[in-house]
Length: 83
Image 1 (tube, one colour):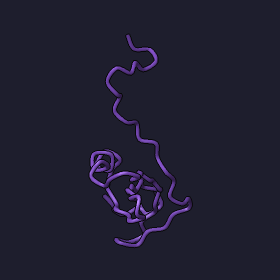
Image 2 (spheres, rainbow, N blue to C red):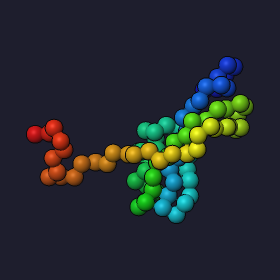
Image 3 (spheres, rainbow, N blue to C red):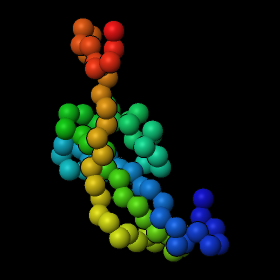
Protein backbone atom coordinates (compact mmCIF):
# COMPACT_ATOMS: atom_id res chain seq x y z
CA UNK A 1 0.00 0.00 0.00
CA UNK A 2 1.38 3.39 -0.94
CA UNK A 3 0.19 6.52 0.80
CA UNK A 4 1.29 9.91 1.93
CA UNK A 5 4.63 9.68 3.70
CA UNK A 6 5.56 6.22 2.37
CA UNK A 7 7.49 7.40 -0.68
CA UNK A 8 10.75 7.46 1.31
CA UNK A 9 10.39 3.92 2.63
CA UNK A 10 11.80 1.04 0.57
CA UNK A 11 9.40 -1.76 -0.36
CA UNK A 12 10.55 -5.18 -1.55
CA UNK A 13 9.83 -6.21 -5.13
CA UNK A 14 10.24 -9.80 -6.31
CA UNK A 15 10.65 -11.35 -9.75
CA UNK A 16 11.26 -14.67 -11.41
CA UNK A 17 13.82 -14.75 -14.19
CA UNK A 18 13.41 -17.77 -16.47
CA UNK A 19 16.25 -19.75 -18.01
CA UNK A 20 15.44 -17.91 -21.27
CA UNK A 21 15.77 -14.44 -19.69
CA UNK A 22 12.08 -13.51 -19.40
CA UNK A 23 11.10 -11.76 -16.17
CA UNK A 24 7.84 -11.82 -14.18
CA UNK A 25 7.21 -9.56 -11.15
CA UNK A 26 5.44 -10.69 -7.95
CA UNK A 27 4.15 -8.91 -4.84
CA UNK A 28 5.75 -11.24 -2.30
CA UNK A 29 8.44 -13.88 -1.88
CA UNK A 30 5.76 -16.46 -1.07
CA UNK A 31 4.00 -15.81 -4.40
CA UNK A 32 7.26 -16.06 -6.34
CA UNK A 33 8.37 -19.28 -4.63
CA UNK A 34 4.94 -20.86 -5.15
CA UNK A 35 5.02 -20.00 -8.88
CA UNK A 36 8.68 -20.92 -9.44
CA UNK A 37 8.14 -24.55 -10.58
CA UNK A 38 5.78 -23.33 -13.33
CA UNK A 39 8.60 -21.40 -15.03
CA UNK A 40 10.78 -24.40 -15.81
CA UNK A 41 14.38 -25.44 -15.39
CA UNK A 42 16.81 -22.65 -14.63
CA UNK A 43 14.22 -20.18 -13.25
CA UNK A 44 15.46 -18.12 -10.30
CA UNK A 45 13.98 -15.68 -7.76
CA UNK A 46 15.32 -12.12 -7.45
CA UNK A 47 14.68 -9.19 -5.08
CA UNK A 48 15.23 -5.46 -4.94
CA UNK A 49 14.07 -2.67 -2.65
CA UNK A 50 12.18 0.07 -4.47
CA UNK A 51 11.04 3.54 -3.59
CA UNK A 52 7.70 4.53 -5.09
CA UNK A 53 7.22 8.24 -5.71
CA UNK A 54 3.95 7.83 -7.63
CA UNK A 55 2.13 4.79 -8.99
CA UNK A 56 4.14 3.01 -11.70
CA UNK A 57 7.26 5.13 -11.05
CA UNK A 58 9.94 3.42 -8.97
CA UNK A 59 13.53 4.02 -8.06
CA UNK A 60 16.12 1.83 -6.41
CA UNK A 61 19.50 2.29 -4.80
CA UNK A 62 20.49 -1.37 -5.07
CA UNK A 63 20.15 -3.53 -8.18
CA UNK A 64 18.30 -6.83 -8.38
CA UNK A 65 19.98 -9.61 -6.38
CA UNK A 66 19.30 -13.31 -6.58
CA UNK A 67 17.62 -14.99 -3.59
CA UNK A 68 18.33 -18.54 -2.46
CA UNK A 69 15.13 -20.59 -2.40
CA UNK A 70 15.34 -23.75 -0.29
CA UNK A 71 14.18 -26.76 -2.25
CA UNK A 72 12.18 -29.68 -0.94
CA UNK A 73 14.21 -32.38 0.73
CA UNK A 74 14.71 -35.52 -1.28
CA UNK A 75 13.38 -38.81 0.11
CA UNK A 76 16.05 -40.71 2.00
CA UNK A 77 18.23 -37.65 2.57
CA UNK A 78 18.57 -36.68 6.23
CA UNK A 79 19.15 -32.99 6.93
CA UNK A 80 21.57 -31.93 9.70
CA UNK A 81 19.85 -32.16 13.06
CA UNK A 82 17.10 -34.52 11.86
CA UNK A 83 16.59 -38.01 13.17
